[in-house]
Image 1 (tube, rainbow, N blue to C red):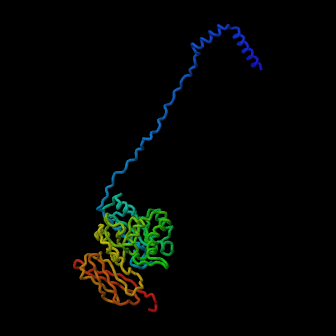
Image 2: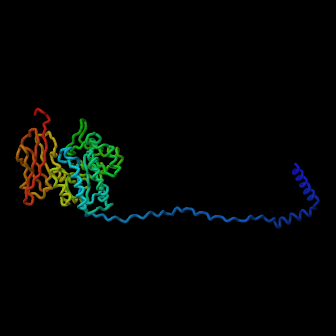
Image 3: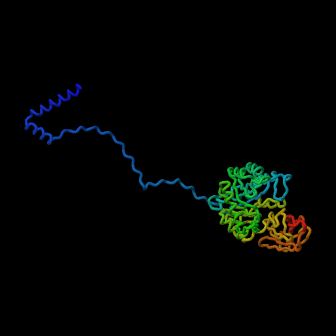
Length: 416
């Protein structure tokens, strides 16, 4: 309150002081104000930071240096090896089974001969011109989806550090017994194993067997295209490779393989694969107990060469005698079957010397085409139930050569 009264007294004093000034004095004060305004108090200027430059729309980010162009060795050659079951001989029978000991010997042979085992992805990158590979390279494939691929072959391949591909047909997966499971395939996937498609039912694609109410076209599309989709959905992968059951195909099958988007499709015709070989007819050497020389030829890198100019139908029939018609060990119901095989691995044959015999029947007239190495025959009379052995003999470079395969005939009616 005291401060308030003091302020009033001060204001009153100023008022009365101005009141006593003369008009001339007031005019003089106003003129001085107009002539020279009072000085403004100047605050000391503080240093200011330089404004950050605005980013220019024209500024470009320098990309990371690109790797130098890859020089791809297009003269390199590849052999693809095909196995099925890797089990002790006491556990199984069949010409396509290989014992663990012999399988390991094969892997050791590859190492001793300095053959480079490459992955399927490296093979495909080489084919696309993105990566080079050693001059003599090897692909290892195991077909069908037997659990022995996981339990027995896998540890051996890991021991050597070899990549490999597992071709499976989906109908067999997870059925128990000797079949591999989806969980095991998932583990193989996580370990870097390539998972390829081998259709749904593993039936010769040249001999469609549609279900009731289904057309041949529907059946083929299911076997070739839908099987790929099943594998991709179950394993969360891109299924890039395909293997023809029995190594067989025709022109329409090739069209569907292309439509499905496979990067490579494999037959069972043993050959050295070159950079320009057709992507949808990559040959493989198949292990067969009765044809050990086929693998020996593969390891030696001196078999036929697939250079991309193969006649269209060369590998359609049975391939390299390791795949025959009927198949080795197959049970058939046709009493007059076509007997067919590819004799390319026997060498250059004298056409006049080629002959075919069937056990219990004898000599059967045959046709041999030197251009494709295909022999074909058919029994003149219906067969009776039982086991049969086909024997093909010929001369190559003046020496006698021979090959055999076996099948069984069972009539559809037991009363026959």
